[in-house]
Each structure stands twice: as C-alpha cells, then as structure tokens.
Length: 200
Image (cartoon, rainbow, N blue to C red; front, top):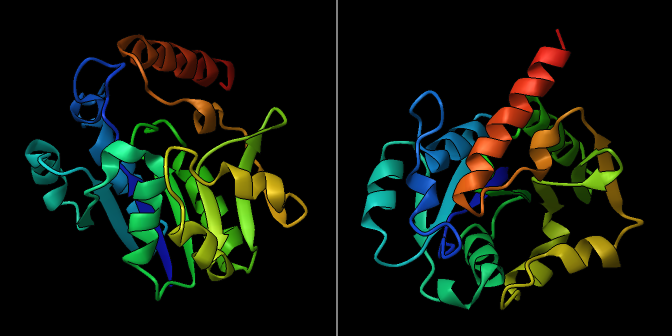
C-alpha cells in the first residue's frame, strides 16, 4: 500500500494569509487541488494540518483524505512529515507532496507513484537536471522519516542516499513551482500558459 502524505501545516507567513485556501483559475482552492491530484495515484491520502485550522479542515473533509493534526507544526516541516509517516506505519511506502504545489502535472504524480510501486527505494522527478516534488520513499526509510524534526525535511536523505535515488525525468516545470508569496500564483500561471502554448 502506498500512502500519499500531503504536507499542509505551514504557517503561510510570507504569503500574508492562508495560501492553501486561495482559488486557482478554475476556482478550486490550492490545497484541494493538491489533495485531489495526489489521491488519484495512491491508495490513501493523509493530509497533515496544523491545530486550529478549521477552514482548511472543512475544505478537505469531503476530499476523502484523512486529516492528521500536527500539534508541533510550528516547529517545522520535518515534524509534519514525521507525523504523517507515524500515522501510517503500515504503509509499503509514502509519496510525500506539498499542499502549496498544485501545478504538478497529474502524469508526473502517476509516474513517480509507479516507480515507487515498482520497488524504487527512493524516487523523485527531475526536470532540467533538478530534482523536485513529490518524493517517494519505501518503508525501509520509516525510521529516518519518523524521527525527523525541525524544518529540514527529508532533503538530507536524498543527498545521503543519492546512489539509491531513482530520478524520473519529466517534462513538467510544476515540480519546482511552489507558492510562497502572492506573486508566485501569478508567475506560475503565466509560466504554465507559456509552456502550454509552446507545446502546441
């Protein structure tokens, strides 16, 4: 069983409001788009949310995802990743995605999930020579992930075990497009429009 863990417990300080509730061009909120796309390629989704995030929880309640509250969310992304992994210790592997990255192509998510199901111990998409999100981990990494703390996340595992990393080439700039400030939404929209036009 592959579990998708969607990290949605950030503070959105740089954005100046809850970026995960902001609508995309079709009106779908950022977090909901990320959750729905992840759910399409894994067996189960756990969305890690911070305490006292009622609007976000209500938004995701009908998505079919399981909500996991991280009481230590303010201490950093590492605690949220550990929270999600510990809540699904029975999984064969995890596909870790960020809720503020709704522009990843569905085909990319499916490709990374397929590599994970096929037995890749550590997998990430690659575009223009750079790794991006989402990142997949087989169960052998449970101990490392369950003990994460602070804001470092799991990047050190990709560096430490780079020989184990299966880099999946994708034609998808979305693996690098996250939303940190309001201008990121507009920039991502423009960039995707340009890429879509050039692909015709």
